[in-house]
Length: 307
Image (cartoon, rainbow, N blue to C red; front, side, top):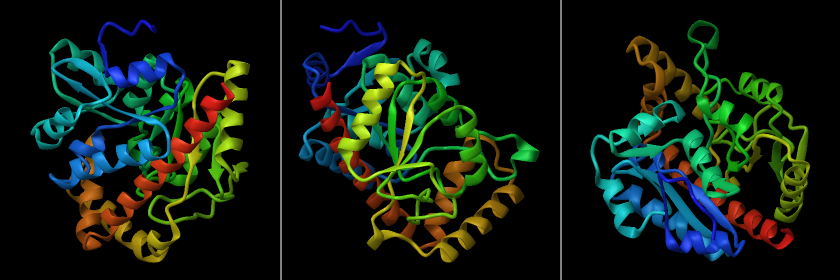
């Protein structure tokens, strides 16, 4: 049986799956505690886990509860986290402090990757990663997600970087760090709420098996860092680019006016976008997360067959 880090509490189902080399898919918890209100958040979390099971993998939602890193939440844990107030949004810089103080924290993309690697989980499904924020030349605001992708051996399945970001600079950063960005059945970078952007990808695949073979080759070569799989939102849920980009630009202007900075920027903007779209952006967000869960589970299953 694998020996885990002393601060990790690995759910029995997850531990048994890892020991048997069965497919496991990690899930973040920030989307539960900071992404949407109760009870929609716990309904979403349960549905995502259900999709992963449906496609043959074991889900492992990750969070920090009472200073312990939980790898695989129970239904009671999910309910508690979904209802809890004052849950810390934990990035890499916050980890040691939250654990030492026995705090309650939701994991971002960066910390979910970090803990997934500690537990031996190779695949992680999320909505969209963080990246280089617009106005970088003034604020130098870059998400820790990008640096984590550069050094942590986890494959992340997402619908691209969040649309509120500077997508060209985000792609430049990932290229500089040597992070492969692979389109899943697309040659263009998805822009979260929309299926495409004007950014071409250097590599794409048509199947989960192809992607699993790339991950396997990378592992055998012992190449450092993660892989980013860009999986477009389903066509029927994709929003019009002009419509959503206008709303995003207005929300960004309001955030500057209101003096919103640092880790408060993303939740502020997403809340504004939900408000201005009358909930359409939230519906799109849910659809893309569910789609990513399906694709992530399929890739994890194919990888387990190869391994």
